[in-house]
Amino acid sequence: MTALLLVSDDPAWPVELRRHLPDVDIRHFPRVGEASEIEYALVWAPQPGLLASLPNLKVTFSLAAGVDHILLDPDLPRDIPIVRMSDPYQSDMMAEYVCLAVLYYHRFLNRTLRLQGERNWQEQPVLYSPKITIGVLGLGSIGKAISSRLTTFGFQVHGWSRTARQIEGITCHYGIEQLPEMLPHCHYIVCALPQTQATAGLIDKAFLARMPKGSRLINVGRGSHLVEDDLLDALDTCQIAGAFLDVFAQEPLPADHPFWHHPKIVVTPHMAGELLPQTAVLSIAQGIRDHQAGRPLSHVYDSVRGY
Image (cartoon, rainbow, N blue to C red; front, top):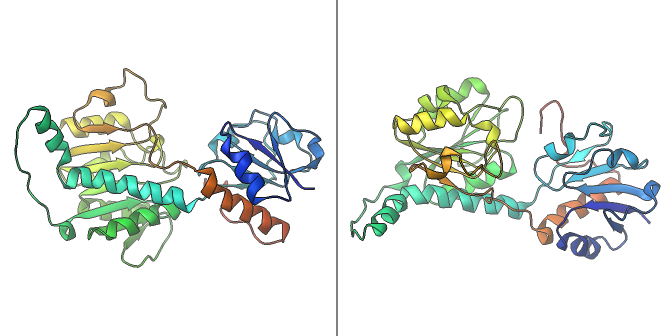
């Protein structure tokens, strides 16, 4: 029987894996058993050398959309494909979060909550949604879900990606040379990019200066995309009116970090999208079936692209 090694603290994963893969022997680390029988691994931050100790490992599945927690292993077998997690429900959750963040500002909840604390009844203006433009950085499965959901509110949506895309209802831009063309039109910028060398520090002083004065930033991508001191400067000079941040360079965010008490920043604890085993397991089961049938794997990590 084919065996899969699971490395996760979530007790729901073994249950769901056995339910959807009844013909696969699910071994929950540290119960490895005979290492040579393991052909698949589903892991979060595996200990260094663990994957290299599995002589017949054929595919490693990541318990996250990113694979950095796997790449940190200095003994990682470089010839074994790594499959990034792609769960449609997680994409839906990310889209919900971004809509929440946009509407928080669009319907002036930031002001309303402050006024509530002052017991001050003060009506807020109403903005016309079709006149509001939102730019989404990253048009993978998550970025596309975010863009699609935003259009249902009537917002104009622009999207930016590394390579050319065509998405109905979205004005698409691509390549680093087209990014400065998009930014000045966007009342909001939503970052949903993967973590790569090319995107590290992308949202810096120059980037923020190209955004319209009084626009807002929402980051659900990676903390490494944002130069934090540059954002603080842009907020303090009123170039940027607000930031809704779910990811940070250091997590958990240190208690003495200035983001915690900045009046123009909303901090959330990396909660925009979670992987729910009952839905995410479907992509793992499909990946194993595809591999066993000799079909190409989807969402394989590309070391050249960095995602």
